[in-house]
Length: 126
Image (cartoon, rainbow, N blue to C red):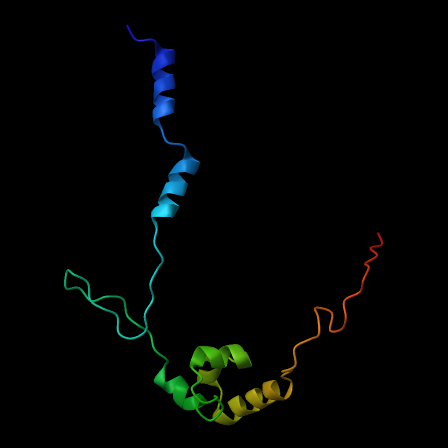
């Protein structure tokens, strides 16, 4: 005869807790290595994941307003102009947008989070 309470207790003790399982899985994981250039093929001979480069059409339409060695993602981040806008706007419209952004660009970092010396004391009123 089996004592069901003892069997249940032994099963509970044998099971790994969720936090221990997750800790073990996280410790066994290694860093994900990302390299530039063409993706290597797999051992099975299937092609690996595609490496997406910059779109030649977008590079051509923005070459007059991009900085030297600036890729498209850096251009998008700097100007706020997206790929759809580059595709739909003319070169003169793109130039106008980039000039407006460049004119309003503030390259001086603030002295502190408040733009000046931080106050010594804060007073919060309800």
